[in-house]
Length: 457
Picture 1 (tube, helix red, strand yellow):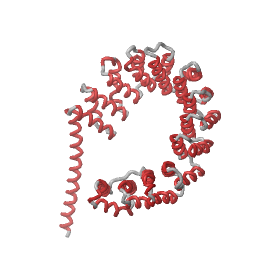
Picture 2: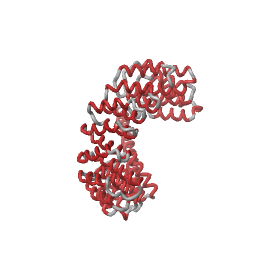
Picture 3: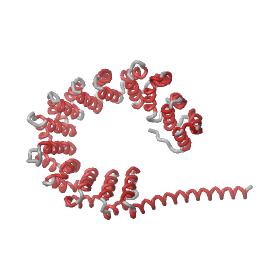
Picture 4: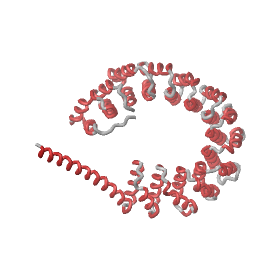
């Protein structure tokens, strides 16, 4: 017996090392093939691989890609590498970027724009003098991109320089001048240049200034999150132009003063729907408990569907018992519009609200008794399969047992997310039924991946 056991162990160990070697060989083969593509591949193959590496967030080939960037003449390949390095915050191409920006006008325009995006993403401040020269240049090809980049990497001096540009002779027609000035305002907001706050407030209050520029100045002030700017921003809410009122409330969302809070609450009653949308965003950002009744009223009565749905979502950001009870009553109400019932369920489930799940379960299961509610059933299913949750197991079994193809498919979504044991036989039956087509293939795939780690989101 001992000899047999000895040989059995040898066989097991041999098999283990064989599998390990095979795995390492496969990994080595994949890596080698990828390096060969980067060295010898055609442009489309290299671009495809770079995009794959970007989707994988793979930084194992940084040295290879840096060398390729130096040697290739393909702008598309260079742009792909820059995009990957920007995504992963890799500064290996910083010297190349600075070199291109030193004399950009001899380079392909697409490459220069991608370089500016790379510099902006990594915050390469050494590039600021070169970017400023692009802004000043008579060649307007890169002006807008350069202004935006300066907003990400510029200093206080650059902020003063850009605010000076606002009143300078900007080349082009009135529309082009407006775009440039709007970009400057946005860049100043990104810089959070506190040294020019007074100038921004002055622009926001200037009734002779273009409304777009005044709104942009307000947005820039809002990004600085300074309570001292509240009076200038509140003053804009008295304007008749809805664009200015919208900008006012959006900016006040970052300012925490009693006056700002009162203005945000007043904005819930504004006649322009975008102002009401910004009020919802501001209340959510500041977690204004005083706004909850306003939010709930908008969810119940607003004439604009986009505002009503946004109000539902905002309610999900507050742990409020009255709001929970109202949302649950919508889910259960047959007379309520299907879109509202689905949205209410989404808020309750996605926000992890403590609520009576049996009421949600009853509402979902009731849709199986009425074919007119089949679309609502689908929407409920989409909501309940967004994340792992032990509660909807009975619902999941009802979905998988349905004869309707879409319903059954959602049942597989439940199984994919939760692996309820009570569903296994039904999934196996789908997998074994050749008439199930795509559903059968998916069921087989799910059963074959049962040992794979599952997402817990």
